[in-house]
Image (tube, rainbow, N blue to C red; front, side):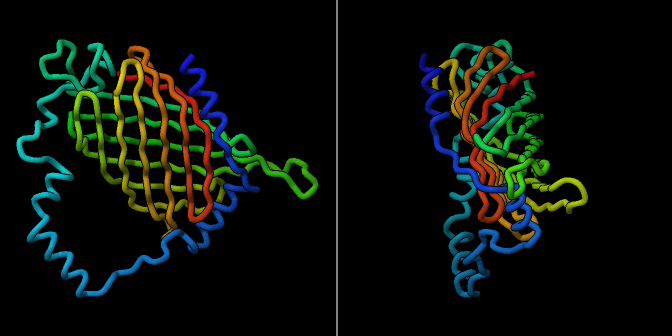
Amino acid sequence: MKKIFFILALASVPFFAQAQILGEMKDVLSGGSNGGGEGRGNGNANNSALWADLLFNFALEPTWWLLFRGPNERSANSLAFSNYPYADGRNGIYALDDYQTMKRMSLQLTGHLQTNQDAVFGGYFQAKWSPNRAFNLDVNHLQLLEKLEDERGNSAGTDNLAITNLNLSYNRVHHPKFQLWWGGGLMLLNGGGDELLYGSPSANIGLTWYFKKPLSFYADAVVGFPNAVYARQHQVRMQVHLKRFMVYAGYQGTKVGDVGLPSLAMGTGVWF
């Protein structure tokens, strides 16, 4: 019953549709204007020198603790991966190193369908490989499709936009109940056909909270500036774990410049 109420609550969230959303995104991208970067500047030399002095003389060690590892903090290599979340009945993907089914690597595949309850729908796929307990290699692809109409309301074909992210991230928090990672990579945007492929370096951050079997909470975001235009992908979802498999429902957001696309997403995943 709780699952039903959760899905109904998600479905009741208003999603405001705009005409030709994907076309507007690509117009902003190709024009390279109004990319959400107003107010960004290099700053003056005095401010830069002041912040550099504060960083290197007063905040270097705390910054290292915040981003990588604090004093007396347990390293990721002192833990192991479970075969799948809640495999031991209480912990998430990380387990204590004496757990009998521990392993050194982990592979997760995830996919979902999404819609903004109007003309735009799409599909998302992610492959996430952890070659060890400290790092993740992640590739994900989002394909968006939009049905177009002419002035008379007749069908005018289909527009599309694809976003691909290649990420390398560091598992900063590796608690059996909580995982948080951050990193960087490459973001690619493609409008299909003969349209240009735009790319830029990107930054990513995400977390998973295994708060109570069989549930977990997941959130992530990827930000880039292809063709000097601000672009963001983010999602929030509630996951239900069924041994090696999971099903989930949540929110997927996409933004290019000032054009945003909120969507309802429902999908599944599996651990190997």
